[in-house]
Image (cartoon, rainbow, N blue to C red):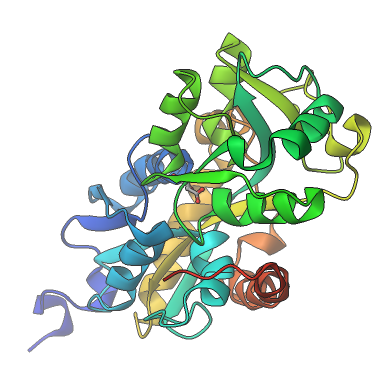
Length: 313
Ligand code: MLT
């Protein structure tokens, strides 16, 4: 047989729609980033990219599903700082190893973390929030997207620093958590900027601070944690594409090229930047860079979370 006559060969890839697993609920930060880059990538690849939300267990359900999928390029995922950085420290029986069970495709966007609250929570700034949180402690409700998610892990960091133990309210993603924050049913959360910009601008939630060294151009009025009096709280998340281990190199190279093209497209770039996303520089867009970064993230988060004494059941 001539190679060109055989369907399904890596060089013909893709010949059918690609499933992009988002391990959280629709409408949240991972879903939003996935749909923005996926839309442009599908044009480059000439095939539909179908987002499938496989939520549960802080993102580890969808991530496990991806790790166990056929390594043929037709199932990929949008992973993040939680699924590929924090989860190993929190799930003793995790069925995947972020550093071994995936072929990295590339970084999609950095997502600074903000401390946000329902709009009628009494504290008007971060200093007041810190005092209030210490006084209210477990009376305060913290929304998060399940153990090991970004919102959970980054608030573990905050809670340890403040010495508080708020009551956790888990969701299948911070999309639905944000709806409840807007409705005033939960008090606060630590979340990725891409989920928050519109609601902060609309005044339907309160933003106390962004946990990065500089303010976000997408939210120029929101102070940094350093400006607002909590300089030790510095944390940022990220979202990146991964394929199952053993996906052919030529396929992940094609997917990486399509991702890079999406990130250089003016419209796609603007959509991500308007939401406060931080785009990787040229070096940070490679598959190799993501591989090294994932290992460094697991190493960074493991001691932070282990010393906090949190584990999933
Ligand atoms: C989501 O898309 O819901 C988030 O990325 C959840 C999280 O990790 O906090």
